[in-house]
Image 1 (cartoon, rainbow, N blue to C red):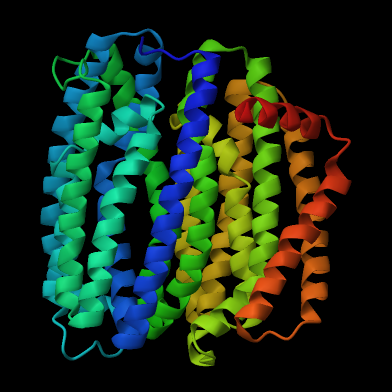
Image 2: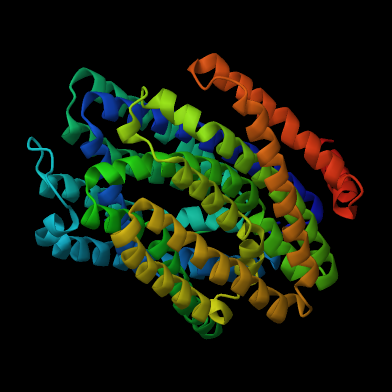
Length: 511
């Protein structure tokens, strides 16, 4: 049977988390190695170009319109009902749409080609042709849509994210190792970038093979029923607006920085952003691995049970987020100093490092809420929030970056995330699904934030006694960060009902 019971949801969530964490760790380590090789063998400008082109193409990916997220939501019901014909018809529709999307991205990318120099303030590396480089990045963005991209959506809805993660881990590992070899042996940036689309093709082929093996009965065939098509189009319109908000937050930062400050600033910001995104990616794996299980639960369980699950999942997640924030606050600068070999020109000042920590915490605190919002398909109800967040972030980015540089970019992002993503999104979720006040949920977040601030200050003060030099001192600080904040959390939370519920959940997941 395709539908999922509570027991299988728990099994799938556990499996998805384990494989997802492995995927994230492999990607994090290999990306760190590649960034290090580029910085020391080619220079920060090359890292800045990579960040700029990636951001431009993320903007072009707006044409994806959020189809995968909307389709995943639409799939939950036929999967729960074991309706194979409906699933096949949805896959056939998504396959056609993705081919159109790939074509639109390709031609839109070509249209931007003559204007690339407008996005770069100052000089580019003389030995590189940015137009050829950009075309390779464009090919990498297009190829996934043309080859089996819809199979990842199917596996996600089927609660088999572990298969997607395993495919990515295998192909990413081989691709990144090959890139490192090319950089070290030839120092040829063109060949390094050419490996990107090759890796993407390999990943999509592996996902297709795994999908056909796991679900041979699911094929892209049939016609979509009119009511499903109408519902899908309605959700896609709203998800498209949501993606504008994500793009404004994640991609315009680098584009604005490159245009107003230069490629070096992009490289410095991008290195800190890499640490942030690596930790945030691990957080994402934990929650995203539960996404399909939550979607299935929303279809089959009561609102009261789902509300209790939300409080429990949120408690677990914010404990981990709080601990990670403390680790970032204490270890960010010592790690960057070690990584950049003491070069202060490639490091941000303390205030910007602190803002990155707040950036991480503010966006993470909205994560569990967002998963429930999306799993329930409340894209349309959230559409105005997405617009306000996108416009607010873009306007504040331009204004504040002009006067404060990277500091302004970070402040703009934090303000819009908290106002529209967290506060606004929480109101929408509780109004349209839980149909009660978000007061308890918000008070919990207030408590988590206060305890995290206390744990962070205590850990920073204790680690401040130590000299911030060398690997051994960094390891000692890490040990303190592992022990002290978690001890504080246990003392602060052990009487909460969520703490007792989590203990029982962990016991069930282990046994």
